[in-house]
Image (cartoon, rainbow, N blue to C red):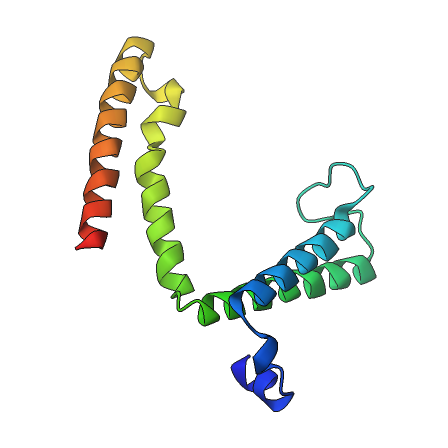
Length: 131
């Protein structure tokens, strides 16, 4: 992607702000693929092949701008995504959402304990990242 921009002398325009605005524009184009379609079932069974191809192009545009933005901001996107998945797992533990596995009173107790543990884990991670 960097070479693509360099070959076209576009690097001067690739600031984080400009890339973000371009990304937002592409998200708008992506949303147009779904505009006026109502709820769409998984797999898009009612879509024409041309519509799916166009959707793939718009998804690719969003992805490419996101990758460029992370590059120009000095963010390792893969590492950041893995960290975020880990933080989400701490913030939203399975036992809080799968209530049918745990009796109600036990679930309330475990949720309160989980909230405290989650706060401690998130605070601990934040401290480790600052050090």
